[in-house]
Length: 394
Ligand SMILES: Nc1ncnc2c1ncn2[C@@H]1O[C@H](COP(=O)(O)OP(=O)(O)O)[C@@H](O)[C@H]1O
Ligand SMILES: [Mg+2]
Image (tube, rainbow, N blue to C red; front, side):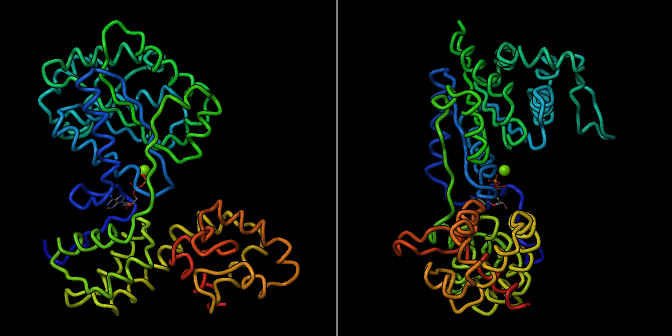
């Protein structure tokens, strides 16, 4: 690879060769796959963590390994925006079709889905699952027999299905979906023949809570894999690996800066990587390149993530003013309640505790527990940097 192309992919699940870390999580997923395959069991996992933390990437990576090492049929279904069960079923079958298109078992899949397969696209490289709403409705209720049937059709090629239902946002608050999940788990449990299936749900922590509220018995049904931010070691490995792929070196000082400002947020790591890559001219990332790249990244991140996710959620003018005052410096991104309060008006002090709660909810500020009671910090230095830039621009 030459330096022409940035190895960073902000916002999309990471290509397998750039995937780093998550050893324990990958291991856990693969252990479930092995167990399901060997003992022919149903395994249930809920992958959770904040937006952009790497849930989809983890699943993508695990599917790739499971397909390679365990020869399972992996289906990664993105349900963002899907709010009905029928649409969900359609997406699942469509994924099955399109993922199989250049595989040896495509004919088995086609015969399994019968005349509902419609070739679309000029070169026949995409296919559609052309089922009526009535058929889809029926398929919702018949999901378990349908999977059973699928396994039978694939008998020669695949014995186990790894089904990842990603981005459950639009379904997690639907009673129908919660009950359906419960019923398929029960149904598989009472089958006479075993159905080797690993069912992986992916969603924000709130989505899991919603599901469990709607159907409390789901609480015990799923093992949880919680994904957290990367630590320093993983962040450095990520940058080393990505830059090495395009023949670029990174100095130790630059590594420190990259780690500090990305705060182990995968999304920020990619955005910063991208801008640092752009500003570097000599294939060595030094301190200056890192700093210049971070300035650019703060702006991009502000517009892309902070503006829509945080600023639009902060309706209160007072809250915004407090944020600006805190970020104005010389307070660092770590600050004590006392220091913050010292620079606020009496009106602002009155709402300070509510402000902190709100910021914690939005994942902008967290308690700095290691510093003791009454200390807070921005969850990422980039957040701090962004608000600091905003305050300065005034
Ligand atoms: N293990 C990883 N290694 C490298 N980059 C990652 C990793 N996990 C996530 N990313 C990157 O972080 C960003 C968000 O990842 P994604 O999987 O889409 O998160 P989520 O599904 O939790 O919203 C993407 O740009 C992705 O490429
Ligand atoms: Mg995702």
